[in-house]
Image (cartoon, one colour):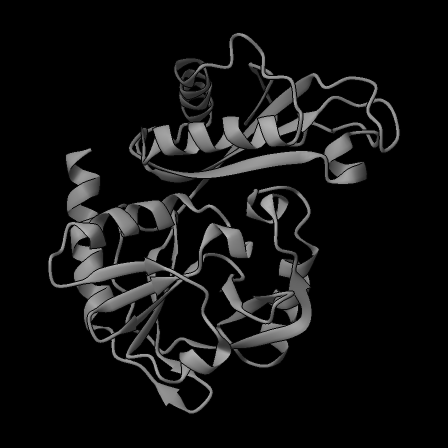
Length: 280
């Protein structure tokens, strides 16, 4: 079942071909992990969505409160009989149809979809996980690149490239040729007691899990987290690389080109992440 503007409908409900999310990528989305109906890091998702809508000049309805949207997500989970399992919730907001590039209105509609996922909390995955750089296209530096919009052509093409080259993921670069993130999450680099992640100003996604991991690292005296540009040259000098997103949590990278990586820090951080999830 899906939730369209507060009304539960069948999953095969058809959207208009004039939908602006389809026609122009004029849409934003949040991917949220729900564990037995508990929305992980919901407040961070909500405030990121509100900030993104303002940047996109979308009109935020008066009833679009954190409580209202959570209620609508719970309503969708119950209607889909998924409130007692772990799910991937996708909340999409699109500007209402009408107009060409210039919309007739900045009013919005929303769609909520839910899909079951395997793991309840965050499991450590120490399987082989190889990455390389995707250099066919680059991320523009600026606020729009930090938003979760429907404009994901680079990620789609990069994912196809990754599959064609028997890779598990790719790291993407910005127009300054600095490493920005992975195709499906933020990147962290460990070198001795320093953990680096690209700054938002480099064009990386303002990730919800990125925020949690930075907070966790800041609570550990022996490590220092730095938001600083990462050059491709630094990747092969790193002790560890790991990728973060709200569904998988932390994914350690085991290999980049000829360099093999350890996973000691990422394993420790994942344990602390699960403690944080249980306490919240």
